[in-house]
Length: 139
Image (cartoon, rainbow, N blue to C red; front, side, top):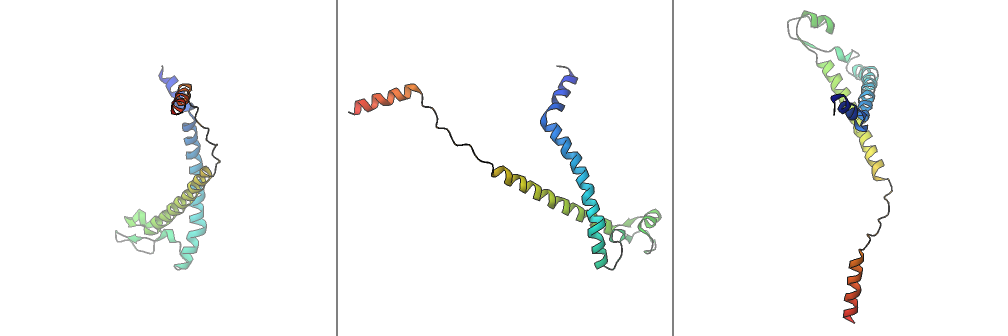
């Protein structure tokens, strides 16, 4: 089998297509969660912690002035951008929680599907004949 045929067989399997769709939807969903964290959650958190943009909190490590914007401080040297790390960590936690809830919902849907009634196994003819002989000998 040629390599192109093998690749075609691999790519046409349902799991590969499902994975590709999942990756695309996951990327789009990640952007939605990024926006939720950056535009909705973090402004509220920033307001609680003094009204500043929380993602721009940093500790200067190279002797820069601490009143510079984060981008300017990074140009001047190394900084510990803990606010950005906290924002991204919160983004991850929200995304992980939502994915957990989705998986939980799908697992519940799988369990609720009706199970087909069990069909009694067919007894082989020789076993039936042996049972009749046994019963006849008991009499």
